[in-house]
Image 1: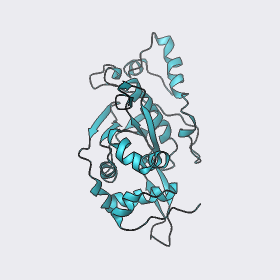
Image 2: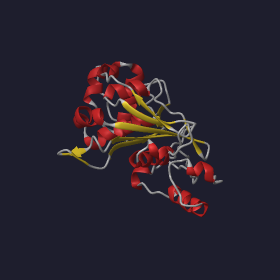
Image 3: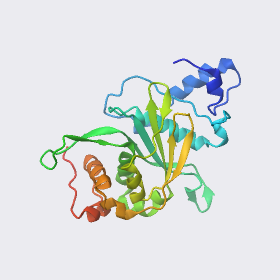
Image 4: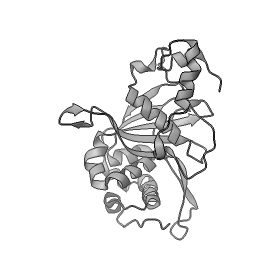
Length: 252
């Protein structure tokens, strides 16, 4: 990948001199986020990275915390797992200021991870062969699977932020604000603070307030949510009450 010193210096990651640019850039590409970012899908060997800058060209570090930068890079790595056209990755986390113990701020806590991928449907129950599960619903169900439905809906999701990344080509980011299905999904589960990438290299923040649990009845929400629960072999009582029937986990 071609390195550009001007773009690199505007990305919010300061380097001492041009001699340090390649070393710093390579260290970003080799960041390891552990088993959470690995998929059973074959995702190829390409590395993807992008720069973050403000519209006025100043360093994005001025308005992007180190924590947000880490979550953005992790979401970008997750997006590489996707075997579909739009490579999106998402990380749901509790910001440091919200994740505290007796009033003392701690590090941000990641509670769910996801990426765009296909899920094969049961043809005996639907006329579709498959559905594309978006990174947002995948991350939501991943959080429920790891932390429990009640804790997520009552405690974690109302305090959470979701970082969504779309990778473009082999070098940049693209716009990935929640789509017309994922927007009401996030509001339905109570996640209203969204951060996403843009083609300009900036991170935009969205406020989806107010949360509305009644949106679980919306078929555009319940269909992908149900499929994601089936894939992860979990049940969501709130979703089942909203749609009026139990959702059987998918056999494996």
